Image (cartoon, rainbow, N blue to C red):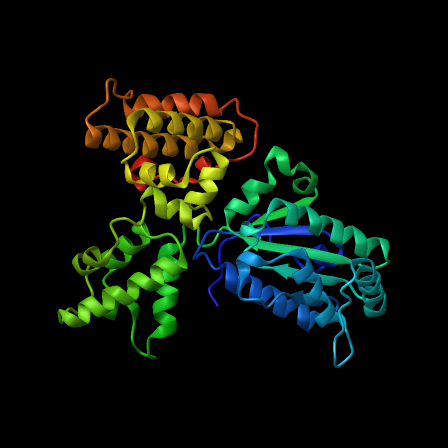
Length: 369
């Protein structure tokens, strides 16, 4: 198994057995699913914590009653599980199940970034209900960075301040090591990575890609292209031909962090159609400037340590705005230079204190580092 670099901490058995709300966040493709699966397996082997999770495939419809049903199924020792329909009876029976279990319970909730704020608040009350009945329940919320940002919003103070957040950093700067590990794992004994992929090609992949999912997908594409063109080992030119040109565009980056047009529209009081037009650079110039200013202001109210991200965000959004202005040919005043915009953004970020917002999610392009 490839060993990822150190992260901001991963919840272990003692942390979970303490009974609390825990959020584990990571971008799409960074290995979050594999990590949570190994965490559940480790807890089950340790046998000090009962692991529970909802198996419903309709993740967008996950609610507290559904999670309570999962707890009944996982804690009950009866062959036929009976879940009371009357809420008071159901909650008293749940407390009794926890008392009989005599062990802490870890409830895993996948895709928690899609949970409604009222559902998150209800989960806090569920933990309190179990605690009052003499049991221990830890709720592990697994989701994209949007979950972490939502928990830090002032409106979510009731649950956000009671939640311990762990950020899984994925590969960080070890993409090149991961490529070498993936190739050695897949190749037959006696075949070296350099026999199938040149060093320049591997370096190019490591520079352009960030997550294991991206690397795996592009390695397959590169080998397919190399096979079709009878190129062995696969060289940098072949890799360059299969690299996605839109992989670092604004919309894909937002998606990897758990944001779509609907969630952005709700956060910035806009219509989903406006957000989609903004991402395409086709929105009316005046409205483009208005939304861009709102998003930049939200980014600049973040932690000062995110100022570099704010600078990258400013550059990305100004570029988008300029493109929209050129397409519409209706701009009466162009934005300031990119360098000036980025510098001003960093300056404002230095005094920011509020929670991260959707706009702070942009990573700096390699050319801007």
